[in-house]
Length: 133
Image 1 (tube, one colour):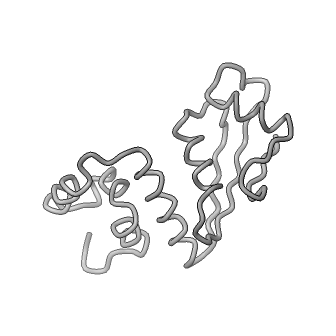
Image 2 (tube, one colour):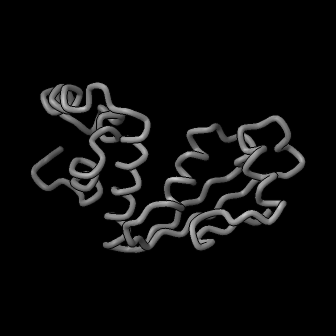
Image 3 (cartoon, helix red, strand yellow):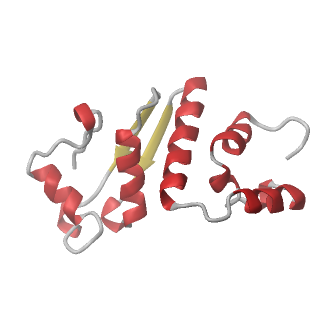
């Protein structure tokens, strides 16, 4: 990145290097190789922790609105992200809006989540996250 990197890039570099390396066009060859060495063997849990930390840090500058549509087509990684955001302990100004079609949920990765929601199960600690159809 150039001499004046945008705030989001600096945040990704410091809070979520496992995510920054996913955008090779944003990195110099040397920085990309250095990051690859640093994150070698990174786990799924680390990636979730890092993206939650980065989003929380970004939301301190200005509130974030994340919109995830058609969760009935979502995969388990998407649901893991939603769950991690709901459980994240760092204060953040993040609103998550997620939509799904109940009629298309059966057999999808979201089936268990949708079943729990329709049975009235809380969607996160202290019901911080809410789901509607």
